[in-house]
Amino acid sequence: MTDIPSRSFGSEKKWFCREDKTEKFVDRLPPVAKDHVTNLLRLADRGFRHGRVEATSKTRKAYWEKWRRHCQLIRLDNRLQGVSFEEKCNAALSFAAAIRYGWYTRGGTVRAGTVSQALSAVNTTIALDINEQPFKVQGSKDFLPLISQTLAGWAREDPPTEKKMPVEADIPEFLAELGLEKEATELTKAVGDLSLMAFYFLLRVGEYTIKGRRNESKQTVQFRIKDVTFFKKDHRGILRMLPRNANEEDILSADAVTLKLENQKNGWKGVCVSHHSNGEEYNNPTKAVGRRYIHIKKFTADPNTFLSAYFEEDGLRRDVKDSDMRTALKVAAEALDYVGTRGIPVDKIDTHSLRIGGANALSLNGYSKEQIQKMGRWRGDTFLEYIRESLADFSEGMSKSMSKLFGFVSLEAGVYSDITQATVESEYEVNVSTPAASAA
Image (tube, rainbow, N blue to C red):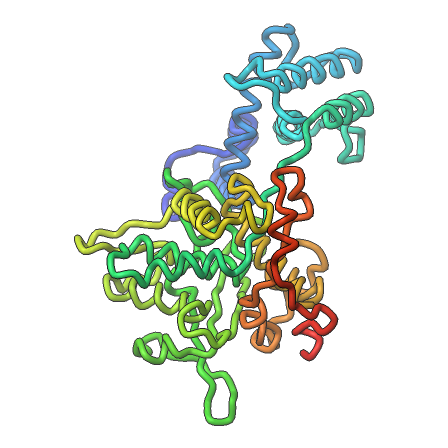
């Protein structure tokens, strides 16, 4: 067992947490026990590292540095040892105000939620070190009443959150059809296909694009080639999985496709989302995935290649970025006059509009809360996540229903622009009394 450190962890004695205390704990042991206990602690330390999301850890570290500077200013121990209750409250409140009003940043006033995040980061750091939570009610997750009331007051002062607005299927269809034009670039084609995928599969932007600057600290793992599985119906109408080396014709004529997420924002792992073909020749979620799959496989056999990858004529790999999607969505919204026909300003449309737009389409077509929650992998009623056996049946017909245009108009339209005349003059023939899903 003495070779575990060098074989699994390297020979460097570096601990993620409690380094000084861990060293002291080990040094007091007799030599015969020291190596064994060191190995056990390293195994535990690896579990500790895996229990942290790196982005959260970086944020916590940044806030701790600000707290350390603040404690130097107010001349208190940064772990608040040996200070009175009143001093703890004053230290917390003064730090909260410094964060709120931008004393330790270049920005201006931040929202109450950001202040709460800063206080929680400091509180957690202290708790990990000395097992005390100075800002929380003992035995509770709640902040001390004085802190809680202050945060509530700031929350009331905060302006309302500006929510992004949903889009309909016409936006991703518009972008996908741009890829049919003779002069279309591979980036244009990729953006169109990914737009269809994001709308129909209710995807978060981090699941199908990369950021302008790579960020390995997030928990979400993007879809890769190996996460895609295509299905075709046999002569009895039963879905059968296509082999990994299926030809292009079979892939593009697949009846269903499943995407598997290795990890995602809410912590669920190994989650699959599935769609059946909606019968459309081009604006079809299964065909969109198929086009991405075929394009990438022409240039690389690496199964870990992201579905965001595309290759231009020079053969070099590039990836669709979140900014590419954001720009394209706004262009499509302008072209389809979302302001004039729906009362939705272009600045209210973003990458999240595809995800909530897909959810909105399902709701308008009569699908239940549980079905939408399942498709979008939202938290709550976690038992729904274990409905794996009937996943294909669960999603059958969804993509066909979601492609239907309702011509919805934002009820907040009057706040942004006057679309009364356009609404009055438009035809409305949707029969909402018989939703598509009711027959399911």
